[in-house]
Length: 154
Figure: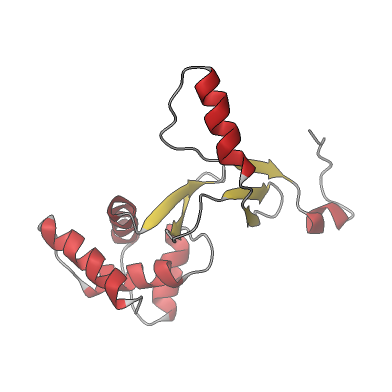
């Protein structure tokens, strides 16, 4: 099970909204919060099956949305036609390099980016409340593949 404090935080969040604290919801939370990467709802459902547990896809989606609302997870859109989720961690805002061929996602952080965003916004009288950065392109492995579709760099 995920860290007891995190599990209790999610359970409290559910109880405060008069939602049942079920084993399915806790198992879904555990899978997502232990995952090192970005999972789709289908990935979570498959992990449940691997554990000998099950939940309908609608339950998985609803629980993932609850984890996002609770602040324990982040929803990501990498342009694949579906959402991915990752555990919120006590890390600085990070960014993603997404390969449009194989779908791999590489996380990175550069401390200059938030400052660039703040300065750019301030120069335009804009107050940002959040930001996301997604860079789409071709990863090193796919560029080395002889039959990889050619992509024009920026």
